[in-house]
Amino acid sequence: MRLRISIALLIMVLASSCGGYEKLLKSTDFDLKKDKAKEYFEAGKYVKSTELIEQILPRFRASESGEDLTWMAGQSYYGMKQYELAGSYFKSYVEQFGYGKHIEDATYMSALCDYNISPRAELDQMNTRTAIEGFSVFLARYPNSSKADECKKLMTVLQERLVEKSYMSAKLYYDMEQYKAAVTALSNSLKEFAETKYREEMMYLKLKSLFLFAENSYDIKQKERYQATLDDYYSFMEEFPRSSYEKDVRKIYEDTAKYLKIDIKNTEANIQ
Image: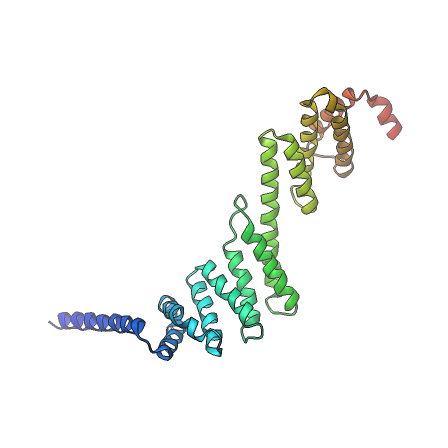
């Protein structure tokens, strides 16, 4: 009997609570909604908090309350891991409240949201670049911030993601036997990410792409393209004289020299 009464009371409390919130949503008392939104936010009830904020923010947007509501909305959506929505509110805060009390944190959180939605390397990296830009802006504005070191660490992670994306995209052209496009993509990637861990492999793929492009060209174009291959061979050997690709690179050199009628023995003797 007591158990039934307890269950009934619990159901009544829950029904009353839900009914009260539904009435609050329909209410025109904006100050009450603002106070309850803050109360829900502080209790970690982010869904209810954001529902109320979405309703009342237009009325308070230009006021001090608007600043607090925008900040709470960003924090609430971040707490729910809805990073795109959170980021839009943090960006809005930065744009509207340049001297606000949360401006430093909002600038950081805006970049952090882009970091959290930055995808794996094989996908489009727009958010990765946006996050790097956001962290760069933060470091320029707040170089002595306690978050500065964390920003630098996150930027390193993002930079590596861009490097990997660049490498994968360039290699894809090579795998598809589109050697001219591969040379262009590999050259651009090596220029943009000179310190990449893939540098040796990418330089080798560029050299081989040049060679295969020359080999498959019309006769009228072959000489200049083999010459480009030879030039790239010397660049490769200067940087990686003991490469793991040494055997294949040597074969490329010998075939290129043969076409260009270069006496390998005399040339190497003169170099020595």
